[in-house]
Image (cartoon, rainbow, N blue to C red; front, side):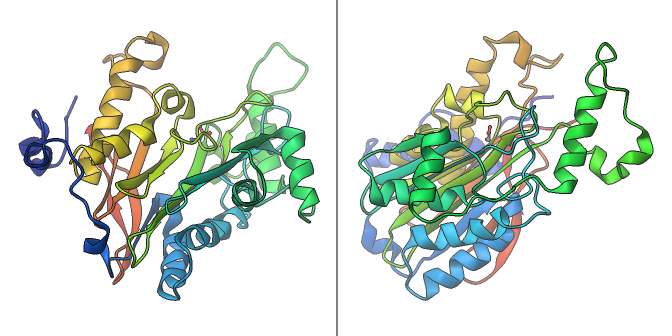
Length: 350
Ligand code: GLY
């Protein structure tokens, strides 16, 4: 059943124009000086180690973009996280293809790579696209050549664990091909839950000066068609930063997000005076509305049958996040403690 805007305070402000937006006449009232000392880092639920690391670096005075990239590198390097980087789940041919983007608030500059093979830290390559080229997005072989030109070493990214999950999916796809069905004992029960997984990490930070930055990195949909690019490397979809307003990023079904420029929308709602949580909910609501035009994306109740979440921080250091469906969490370091918090949501899972 639809449980719109799970937070009571959003009910109060969400029906019509928010109080903040009314008071500001739609103008941005957020000023940089108000943020001094309000360091914050948020990330998707799989990013609790990233928020810890990023906050450590913010405290040392590091640039917020360097901080969030160092944070997500921990997850990219972890073979046990099968949603990003090394050990990420592969495409239908068993090849790991990675997408990532970064955006730096103070310079309003961004960089991204898509369908990058054999390099486990696409977020670092995305930052080099920002720093060392006049481009915003490099893909495929060009992105790989660029990474190698900067000294990145090619590595095999498919771990044995991810290979087994891929093989199981391949064997269970059809009884009309030459692959026998999987033997159940060939894959430990815990791995079966990953059969239709996709995952991503987004991480956003604001430093003591009120400067914002964001990164999103992923191995994309498991078993995707080779060359498929998700929302993560698309600036405006997988993330967006406006240093005068705030930053937002996403995880979940990339196609729905690309078609609606969701992170841009979330930042734009913050510009109009909505809180980060309200802004994320409103971006999701628009995506849910548009998805109704595509019946294959709907469940039997006529609601989106996919997952999508947004995370956001505004210029004041206020943070929030929201998901289409209940039950999800995000990682927050508020300068004092690092913990997972529930995301607001549009629809309550039955
Ligand atoms: N959000 C990650 C993807 O769709 O690839």
